[in-house]
Length: 334
Image 1: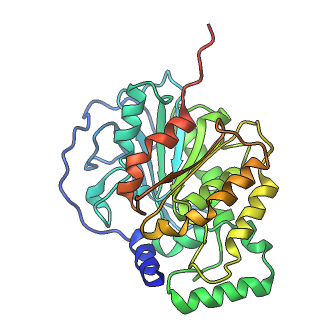
Image 2: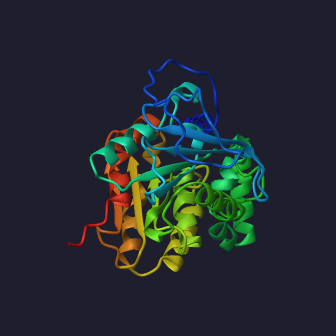
Image 3: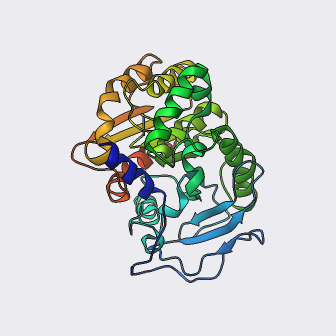
């Protein structure tokens, strides 16, 4: 299991070659004025919409990385769009540029759901990861710092003995959240027509990206209404014996989670194969934590997908479920 974990964790954050894929991208005239730093990604292989990018955005809080913004077909400056902020941005739209030739199929799924009026008009912000920083950017910092010094050191020693990629830098997720909230969010909301309503901002990711998604909402509950946490990596790192990390996460969530009903939603899910096989033992703990704060089905989901693995091909098959949960249109008032 440990050997497999190392291979899967390493592969998940690499990039590689392209494969062919048909594109039906609309090459119509630009419909939105944007700042000079954003440019259309002309060679992006999309099924719908257009992709804009700032390459190597220089942040005050994290290492330089690309920021993508996907706009749906017929984007209009007369509509205030919901915004879906997603981690691991290089894995979202175009499988011809990903390490494993897989993608989340975000453009296909969001476009389809919008056409069927199952979600609000939505744009997607993809924040790329940086390979050597991914683990420390996405690992929730406050639960880590709440552990005793000796416990943290023991975790570091065990992980360093088994992995060359984990905990090689200081945990940096509080700065990563500043990158999102103080740099990316204002940049997006200045240049694109989006809603400022709390309920119209969601943050989403898988594996370590699932951890940083719930952490972002709990750290910035006044900015984000929904956390979408797919195949959340509750072990936090290597699945070591007597791992103190999950309990630290759950204690933090229980402390910071606002009592429901409120303006927040939390979606979790997990499979049962490959790396996801580590997650079912945490199912009941997650349910108990949210039940203790009165979360019901309208604001909390924790779904099991039997036989599914830890991959973009698994996640893109069920992405529509959390998106409908997070971004379902508000009922009209006659």
